[in-house]
Image (cartoon, rainbow, N blue to C red; front, top):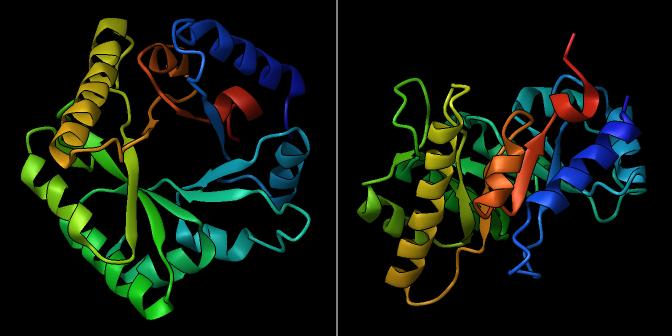
Length: 227
């Protein structure tokens, strides 16, 4: 169930964290609805949240129903995507926000070509160099740039998961790295293609917004702790 007071608090915190010198700095809430029923997706949509994040293809297959009454809802895949799940993923989801390798984006490109569609994606970056995390390392610039050559895939931005720590300096440092990488890649591409920065979750979204995040992925802060 959606906590409307929590949603108002999140919106207020986002407004407070936005840079007043950048009035066009829009921040989108991505409601992380994993493990929650389809009815929760309908509830958040009714409260004005038009993006959801799910991290398991199998769960989405079982849970997703008709979105006809939610015409502006964007279904974002935010988890680790196995290559054998790509076909079903792009059938179910509007975007893949966790492209963590050149191999995966090639698979998405091949499937998108067969499906006659263009798939928007975000590249997942391991900004904290934690071994347990997926994603491109920040020095793998050449591999990232090769992603832009793939057909039927549109790279809209970058995504990262903050480090597993309560140290706000380290968290902020990881988010700064993603912002710097966005600037570097856009300079190399010769235009500002990478407009989205998906960084910040329930515990650190305010820091992320301060560092330029355009999407925050919130579950616990919006719905409470998962049972």
